[in-house]
Length: 190
Image 1 (tube, helix red, strand yellow):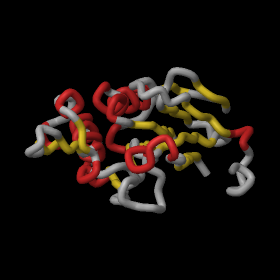
Image 2 (cartoon, helix red, strand yellow):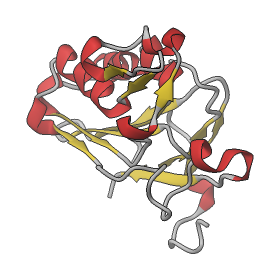
Image 3 (cartoon, rainbow, N blue to C red):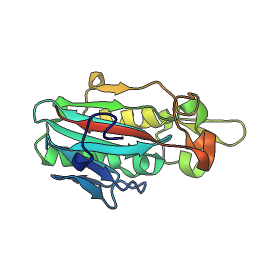
Image 4 (cartoon, rainbow, N blue to C red):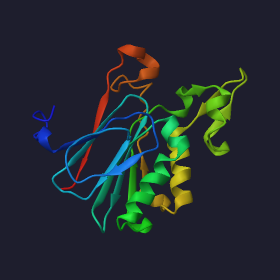
């Protein structure tokens, strides 16, 4: 894949993706165990991860050139991976007013039905109760609420409206089960 897009895989840094809330500051390429997000300011690194319904969240501080790439599934989202990422960026010198966010394609609220045990972890503004005692949850909105609560300016939050479940261009674990492929996300400084 690296060759196809004109990159060297020697520069790739990848989180293990264990559905955690853990992020790590990195200075070199490789696979990082026990984390779902990576942060760096190293221009020689390409941050990568794979998704099939979870939200790939891209972070960029325009003043310090700190970038982050996070795999944010419901477990990581509800257990604090987004605040943990912002906190680590701030520890490395980021100012909250300079941070921009892009959330890539993910399963949309119309297609993401869950039980009460999962729904109870979401902000009331990011879920909808159904007649069948199930819930619909909105990952993008949950993350947006967390970001604005942390002080990220709303005009610095950008969200893909492409639903992985609805779009045949995307891979979806909810739609295709174990036969689902994965989409790659890449982030780097140029």
